[in-house]
Amino acid sequence: MPLPWFKMWVEAGHDEKLETLTDKQFRVWFKLLCRAAGESTPGVISGMPEEVLLGACGVKKRNAIQALHVLEALQKLRIVAFNSDPKTGYDITFINFLKRNKKKPSDQPERVKERVTRSRNARKRPSNAPVSPSNALRVEVDKEIITTTPPGVRVTPDPPGVGEVMTEFVKVRGSHLQTSNNDYQAVVAALKVMPPEGIIAYMREVRAKNPGKEINGFAYFLPGINQLAASSEVAAAGGSGPQVNRKAQRSPGPNETQLQEAKRRWMQQGEPIDADPKPRG
Image (tube, rainbow, N blue to C red; front, side, top):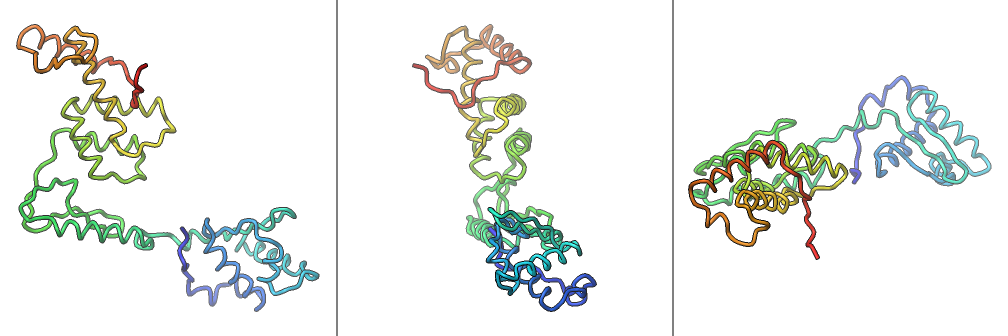
């Protein structure tokens, strides 16, 4: 969503390129700049009808050539680039718009609201409640993320392997997407049935098979992880399916040795399974 404002640099009042424009050309430049800033792609006007362009240039249709001369003057100064089509209209791009209007997180109201809400929720947490480093209060300062813990809050360490799995999950899912507490809890649940290196290998294989698949959260991998873990236990016990609680019936001796051997073989050359298993008819 475009911002309702854009940056106007003070040098515009004495810029060498803009100084060469006539008063009328300068007004046209400013009107088109304002319109381009409000487009869905900031800095780019797509499909502007000729009537709108003529209105911005303050000329009538019989003098349309004058509007074209204004655009040509701006293009010659490398302020804009444009092309026209009788059917779709004019496409006008301000060449340095994005360079001079870089966005910061604080420019987006929804991002500011999200950080404020997260901060307030952290302050409401009971002083004796345990908190993991992943859920600690996060304060964003420019491009650095500083993790701090509110005074009086008892910090409990993450379970072994959580950091490794979460790091790989961010890579597999896409680093531009944010993780949530639900992802953290799902990873903890997965580590109860499978070691971190097995989870990481499984995530990589699923992503390789479905490169364009949108992954909404770590819970997407849970069904496959649980099924794979159950299959390895059944195979080690010599069964054909998870029909009984083999874990509860397992006793020390040869069965335990077989289970460990099966897990070792699976870690080296396990067979991948579908992340979204469909019920069999």
